[in-house]
Image (cartoon, rainbow, N blue to C red):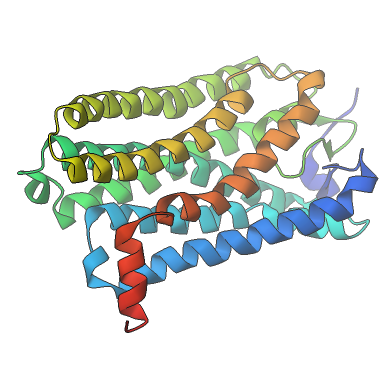
Length: 307
């Protein structure tokens, strides 16, 4: 089979959900609603955390980072998806595909690391309350947040280079709604075992290890909470930690289904809907999870409205 370079073709065709044309209008409306909700909810958290001095704490600093991350993450793929769902044109330029792959991977990996940082913040708050302000000082918090972003973008650079070095064969149709490593590797006419192994190792590092660290932190938190005698302290710890743990599950479980299993033709359609969940639905739910029944946020809203 003839080897081709995608750059010579100049574009990729994103097949997306073209197998189900009757669903495209419905998907467009639903995804647009979730995207607008993502933008509104996460911008609300960022603005509120910035304006209200009572929220100038490590927890809301990291939450603002997560909100900014979710805005960038969903924007890296959803506008292109909406454009493809709206009309018959379903192409993306080679450069656009390369940039999309890089930023989706970078932002997704950054979120994995940032969720670990947030779990450590909750561990320090619950288990080391007397030393919390010293341990989680502003300089250390900024260093942790910056390290999360740097790790994500460095890891993505490795995968992006490895993926776009692989020669393609015969066609440039990507069986997905955005440029993703497993879908692009399926177009290759050479052995991609090394790429798949690199992806598996990196996914294990940035998915399994963060999960182990997060659940280790929450194991220690659970022990500390069970020893609490004050009911208010128990409820506050349970509320903030429970919200974070829910966000962790919503993000990591779909990611594990995509990146920690071997790609097969039968699983490709399923992978699209799983990816749709963690790129569209999860970022819109995060603001609700963190602000629902959150007394600090309700108080900040009342103060902002002058009540």
